[in-house]
Image (cartoon, rainbow, N blue to C red):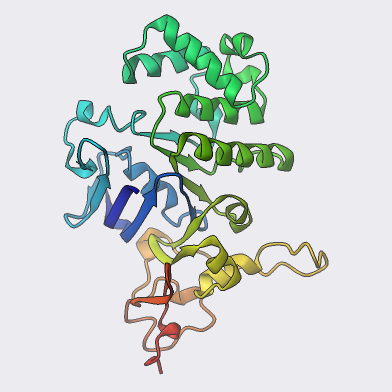
Length: 330
């Protein structure tokens, strides 16, 4: 069953230089019990896409009229972009959808105990008493593997290690029992051992709670271990989507291939890393035609720089946008 549907999502920001495009015509679905990986370099629009699902955007954000974000619920579908008042968003933010941010130290208030912050959000989003909220919070800290949770409940975030902070963020996000969890680069600042533990924890939580997860990262290696499907994003556009098996084993878009070639090879540790050539353009220098053509080694002159590529279906559930994949390309 589909949990969330995003259709033709286009987001622009008002700036002194005019409107700049951050996300352009992005569409995807997330089902119950599914982990969708959203992959791309910094500046690709991953976090903007994720925050838009909860309307965590600044006042200068402009959504295109064709954009649709639909949350499918038993009581009826909810048009997220149609909610105008902040109080109408309360059931969505922290209720139906929760988010684990990239840096927990910037997410927890340093002068308030971790437990007090967990209890506060439960009082906002549920009808629990303060005592029941405390009990549930301590239980969730234990569920995510934090030892001596009753003592940790009364501590401040600076008293937690990096891995514990991330686990506490996950516990806080899950305590309201959301149907969708957004994890924005949740393992970037962690060492390899703690990273593996957090990834395993998230897979266990999906199996237990049947929630959906939007997992944002720049690392296809992490996605290969975690996600069911993957969407590759470049400069605000989805350039390839499919199951993890299809995209990792049979990448079709030159950008996806470049990301995979940039990963170290376990079977050949002496092999040089092959970074994607060039740099991602700034939003004010957005290329015409295919947005990747300025860094693409197979770009077709006169075509890739002038025409936007159409989506090409490569296999059931696997598609990419690249002129080189079309039969009529010169």
